Image: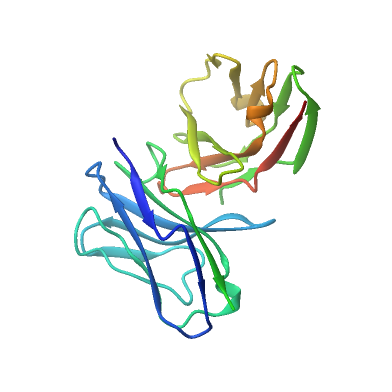
Length: 113
Length: 113
C-alpha cells in the first residue's frame, strides 16, 4: 500500500530534550515536506526536500532541522524543543513539488512541557 | 503573492442537507493547481481532488462536486445529502509556478444527526 509513515503518533516531552520524528514513504517520491498545524493558523510548511541531500526552509523553520540521506526518509529533528513547538506535525510526499498534490502521513501530535 | 481564503471557519448543517464550502484564491500565474483535502476527527489529511487551471469542467464524485470558476477565482466544494461521516475540517490549497502548495485555514464542517 502506498503510504507515508510517521512515528510516533503521539509524543509528550520536556523542554530542551532532543527528539526526532521519523517519516518514511514507499512511493519513490522525490519531494518531501514537513508541516505543522495549529488552531487558527492552518498548515504551515517547516522544511522541504526536492531530492536526496537537497533541503530548504519553508515558512516556519526556526527550531527545526531535517536531513535527507535516503530518498524514502525525511526525519524532523527538534534539537531543543520549546513549548511553542507544541503542535500537530505532518510529513508529506509527492512525485513532484506542488503539481500532483501531497500524500500525507497520519500526523504526530507533539506536546512540549 | 498567492493566497487561499476559506471565509467560512465553521459550518453546521443537519444531516441530508446540501452544503457548499467556499474557496477563493489569488494568483498571478496562468498555470496553477487547486486541491481539496479532508481532515476527519481522527486527524489524518486525505486528498480529495486536484484541478489544473486549464480545466474548468466541474467534477462530480458521488455526493461530492466541485465548481471551478476562473472568472471569480473560486473553487467551491459541495456535499449533497450530507452524512455525519462528512464531519471534518476541509482544506482548499493552491500551487502555482513556484510549485509551492499554499493551504487555506480550513473550514470545520459539523453534520448534525
